[in-house]
Length: 145
Image 1 (cartoon, helix red, strand yellow):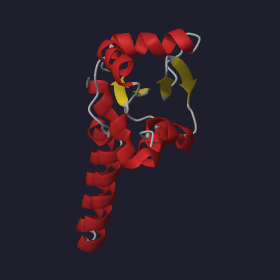
Image 2 (cartoon, rainbow, N blue to C red; image 1 turned 135 degrees about the vertical axis):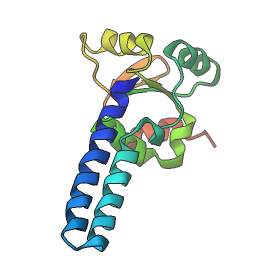
Image 3 (spheres, one colour; image 1 turned 180 degrees about the horizontal axis):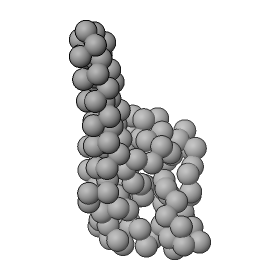
């Protein structure tokens, strides 16, 4: 669990030091702006930015019942972040599994990626898609008319 917070914590620490340096140099406005940028970066790279994760087994059970895709991800992954941002509010329509919190999720990803934990890996109707185009994923999560 701690591994998911390393990058956000490092961003906060670096931002704090940089802002303190600017503030001590007599530029508090720039220090506040820089600190805000680092706080925002830490926020989007944290697990808080992603929909609530479930376990892989629970996600598989739910996906079988409702037909929604399963997105396997991990915090700090730029491709996962890109997918999350591009999905917008539609991200809530998928089941999200953090592979750093769920060993079964990590095993499911390794099983389809030659032993690698390549994310995002999206399962749609039981078929894995590694790092798919976000526009395609958005089509998969939108409800049928």
